[in-house]
Length: 433
Image 1 (spheres, one colour):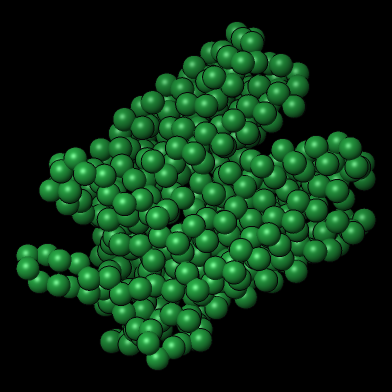
Image 2: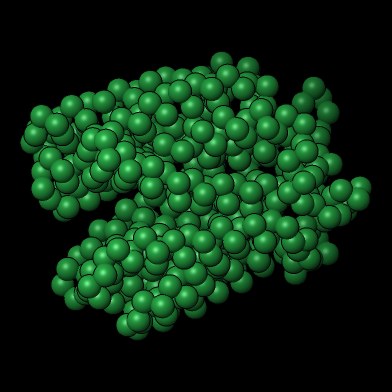
């Protein structure tokens, strides 16, 4: 709901009045980072499943494999924002190149330890740096979109967020399949080895595309003063909680759908059921980005999150696979709008110098929520079956929705003046609720 005191954005061209994927992909310089960015982010979806399959093969325990994967997820969630902050300060290339080298070395160490049947504590010790050094390609691509769409093309930011959401989901459809095929058809370590190799090669190709990277202020980078963290913005903290709830849906669905498939005596249907969930997410992302919305992003986020919470409510009551597939698709349809609108709000809440860090807080929150949900849902399903595990997405979204409603006033962008060369410039106005 627009307010009289809030800035508004008036489209200046026919292109901005009807933003769409064709206009977005016609942005000068976009393909120079999109193609290498897609290749570089593919390994991220292969890491967890590759680790689980390798560790389970060498230890014979899914519990140990899941715990190692959880260590990786938590480590990434804690360290990703620091990497994003360094990228904002010193440039993406300066952070990415050493990061991909360290990640490849950590993954190689994990493979060697697993194949050598090293103690569990040694696997965990290798899993931590493997997660800490995961290159944050997705947030870096989003930061590049925000940079190239600044100014007259800023109305395409929501479309860019939708495009990135679809790309992420497509990655998480292809990556696990590729890793599983390599682990089962070639060698148990092949999936993880491919992940490390693709990270090294794809990350290096992405880093070479420096023209589209957000600009870094040399004076600020060399001043030695620590810039304010993106998390100091109240709205970013509220969005981080919202993304924790979304992570609880991903983690809870993964465990509970797998357990449900086992309970009905048809474990092979797990991929189909989770695939419908992913398909709903992708479909909603495509449609959402093609629509011109009249309501501001805050109102859209609250509505989308409320719908997501309602969609998660009946999951724990389902006893038939077709119904679970339909409900899973409905949940997926509700996730994409919440994710896309959340990323759109990030751009309007933080200055350009903190965008990469802000985006990594969001992806880190999803990873942390997912790791917590996998752990809790696993415990619940072991003791009370898959229906108990489906309570985790519902509880996570309810708590996040309550926080969002309580902090909704912080999700409004504020005008920020930036002093440059004695002239005070103002950010382009945007539509807010």
